[in-house]
Length: 229
Image (cartoon, rainbow, N blue to C red; front, top):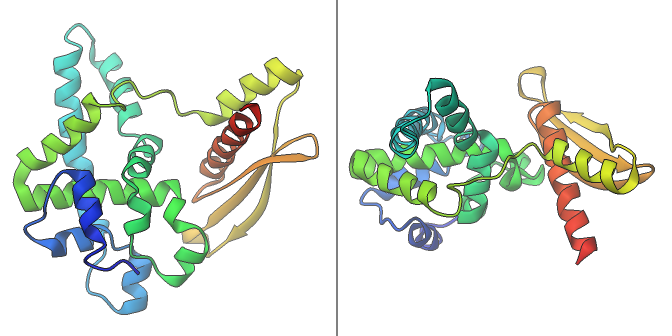
């Protein structure tokens, strides 16, 4: 479990010191932790708020950055920047997963690296920033990300990237296999592996088969990069 003192490195990464540290704790608290500890809050309400703040700031920034773009072009850029994959990449850059409060089951099933969970926590963090420091604090944080290394975020369709590499190098396509499905119908976790012939290239998990396949493809791409070094 993350202690209050352990939040200090995260605040340093954020470039923001919370006046109400309970908001940061709430943003980092997954519902699984709240259920197991009988806590009165989790980060879902902050996630809802943060999603709207993020959309507003990104839309404003895009209108300023691309004055000649029409609504369709702006919408595509916005969708990419606020996508689950983009938010998860941002969360990974901040090391957000290490600071999350998770239930035992979520912890053991790899929740700290799960794309959907990280993306939701990122939105909750933005919501907490907004409540603690106002719109300006949230805007500075989001624009700092937008104008930084993620401003020209690459496409995050890992399956297509992997397919292109495999087709070019080996004249064949990778195959995906669902290894396991856990949880009740309303809260399933899919575990998928991607193969080159009989060789497994990577594994991934997600709340949908599509998400799990993308995670597996991402892991496979990392494996291929390591092999090439």
